[in-house]
Length: 73
Image (cartoon, rainbow, N blue to C red; front, side, top):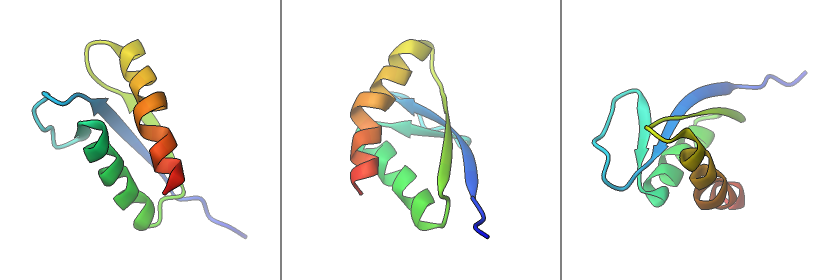
């Protein structure tokens, strides 16, 4: 059968946020690059947890600014 390799990843899309060791943080392009590397490592499922002070805004930015470009890769 097939094994699904899933990764739970906290994401914060913020061009001005300081790096955090346990969070994928940065501008949309930087977040896309990091998430692409996870896929290249063999993760076939990514479970996103939005970080930062405004979860609704973060979820929207993830859906609009990141996920379409990540899927296109």
